[in-house]
Length: 318
Image 1 (cartoon, rainbow, N blue to C red):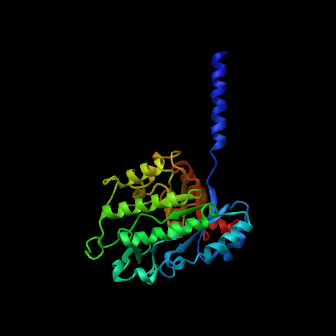
Image 2 (cartoon, rainbow, N blue to C red):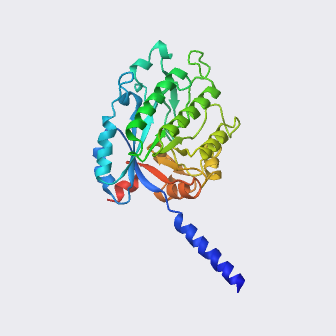
């Protein structure tokens, strides 16, 4: 009799736990100024909100002069539809002409503010030149944190969350003019996300992490240190790409998402345009919605998936 009661209790607890394990919520992913074009998608009952990318230059057109009108307009639209808004504050850009940080930072006082980088935009596509803000420069980072502080004062608790861009960069690390070092970059990234966590006390705070410059397979313990810090300080983590089982990611961030599944404050992963270009090596076809979702939920522990508006399932299911 006692054994039956124990088994019954265990079964009840299992069912209760399973009921709590909900699949990731679906959000759209788009750029500032494009939300009106996707109004019909946002209205769908299976879409819970939208993540919108805003450039640093757009939000701070002059030193200490902030223009948050784009966020305010987007927030008004999401609120009207009872949807949620995530904001990504972009300090790196993937086009040669996109030097989208404030002009005052692109001066000798801030060592030029930007450094050229190369981006791999997806499977089978040629690398593209872009730019990344020199966050390892303390003066540049201080201005970025001033922006985060101003955003928190205006939007904390009003937006669902804020996320900082991916950790991956590909730059000329030997250029002495940039002042770059692997440790400086790592320390600067942690400094920014901890600052954001303290500034935003109500909205979610998420750091995108995929690769660290100078590191492979956690050989500098950058990845393990970030995940430990995030778990301890209620910092969410995520990434710009869900590519199930991809070898490069499996040697970097993915195993840590799996190891910390259920231990992080929040996990937000994305299926962006480059992600859609990848082919499943088992089927020799593009990854499906179901394959993305299953990997994000079962292996990465995602709470949210930010879907490119170009995702085929969004176009097919109208």
